[in-house]
Image 1 (spheres, one colour):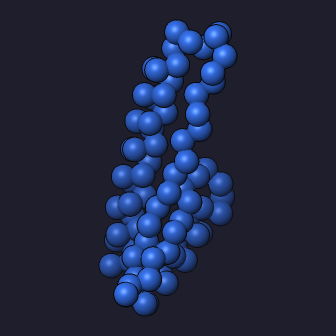
Image 2: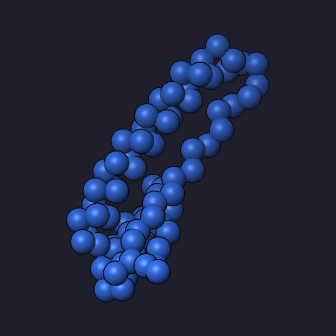
Length: 79
C-alpha cells in the first residue's frame, strides 16, 4: 500500500519546506502527498450576519485557488 504524506497548507514559513520534504519522500517511496487546508468559521455575531455568506464564499474561493496551486506543485515535485 503506498504511503501518504499529509501536509497542512497554511501561510507559515514552514509550509513550503514541509511540502518539498513530503514530495521528496513520496517520490522516493512511491507514495502520495495529501494536502489539508482548514477554513476558519465565519464570525457568528449579529454584526456580521448580513455579510457572513459572502465572507464564507470568498474564503472558500481563496482556499480552493490556493489548494489548486499547491496540488499542482506537489504533483510536479512528487512525480
